[in-house]
Amino acid sequence: MAAVSGKKLFVGPRFRRIRQQLGLSQTQIAEGLGISPSYVNLIERNQRPVTAQILLRLAETYDLDLRDLATADEDRFFAELNEIFSDPLFRQIDLPKQELRDLAELCPGVTHALQRLYAAYTEARQGETLAAAQMADRDVGTRYEANPVERVRELIEANRNYFPELEQAAETLRDELNVPAEGLYAALAARLREKHSIQTRIMPVDVMRETLRRFDRHRRQLLISELVDPPGRAFQLAFQLGLGECAQALETIVGRAGPLDDAPRRLFRITLGNYFAAAVMMPYPAFLAAAEALNYDIHVLAQRFNSGFEQVCHRLTTLQRPNARGIPFFLLRVDNAGNVSKRFSSGTFPFSKFGGTCPLWNVHSTFDTPDRLLKQVIELPDGTRYFSIAQMVRRPVAPHPLPQPRFAIGLGCEIRHAARLTYAAGIDLEKTEGTPIGVNCRLCERENCAQRAEPPITRTLILDETTRRVSSFAFSNAREL
Image 1 (cartoon, rainbow, N blue to C red):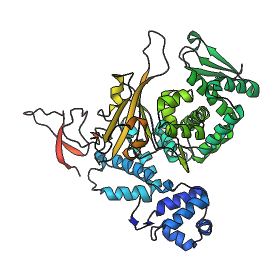
Image 2 (image 1 turned 90 degrees about the horizontal axis):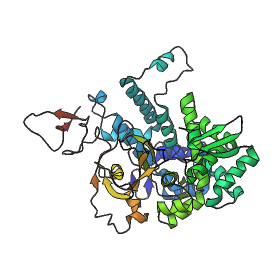
Image 3 (image 1 turned 120 degrees about the vertical axis):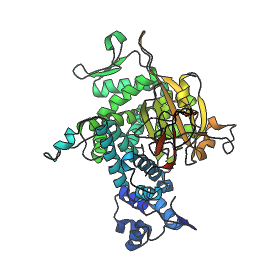
Image 4 (image 1 turned 60 degrees about the horizontal axis):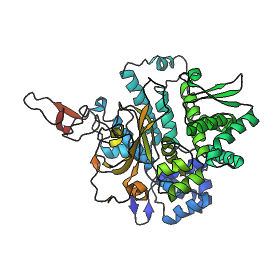
């Protein structure tokens, strides 16, 4: 949290963020809390503290979880700013870490703008054209979207990977269907048929070829490949229902994101449809209650909700409902070449936006032990410790002789939450030494790492033909300015 003096907290920017999310003016929230508008103004400018009494009144009056004042967003923004300003482009600028942290806390909008600007710069540096950006000089309606995937990831993070409209719609649908998990597929197929005149058909692979799902608008048929497993089939039906029955909610959420080019707009809508489908398969109240009762045993949760391992892990990162939150997990999906195809975080784990992951994190080892779930305590250079589990998944199967698609799923949380996980039973979390990892090689300044793929961009490379070290790269101890 912010600076603490007794029971007083200086949380001005976060207080302002909550007020704006509630759609209230300073005068309106002052009336609700029984304080003066001028006092609210001073709180938001960090010139007055928030007392414990005001915090409790805030939570009771507006049905908020006080963890909304936690530093998860600021920690994530700080990690991303630190990554950006480690680039050699800023080598001549001596920028103290505290200034970056102040910027992340006080000006999240500026942080977001810097992220997008640096992403565009990175794309341009790698040879991507800036024609769209140049056209903006002649057409004010043209915008440059450097990477639609990253843009959508930013939107998900901005919403903390939680969309209440879709959660409510999914719960309403499950209540109307009123079927157990094993009967969900049949109930969804009947709903599509009876309410939307859409017939579901499971098709042979030689007909679908490289396609897993296709909606034939003219024949009103939803075609699903036989290669898709039962949980995946239910997911695809729920996705199709979401596009039809939640169209207005989807457009409302997309509209809140502001102006978007066609690619990120379409991708965001698809992502929201997937979110709805997962919420239908694993309704929030029942899923959270089961997760807590089972100490987050993923395999049992998968059986209970007739879902896949990856589906359950992904769903766990969305449990961010105020006053009904689960453990703040982070999730990573990589292939055996180390390419990151999915990352979500409802906690503070500093994912890299412009590089890969650390090879010392055992999520990469799952390809060598495909039938085992691996556990690990990891520690970042700043001393922050996390508990993670990882397992390889296959989805969906591919006909011979095509290669079978394989991914590794890494799921983790801060070490302070790990005792609530069944996977941490019997582990002394305080005494267990964490595996030292970095965000990625280009930002990690750990010395003598045999797995290092490149030197840190914040250090000067030392080349010595007379010496061969454990690491392929030696570098100076002094940070470059």
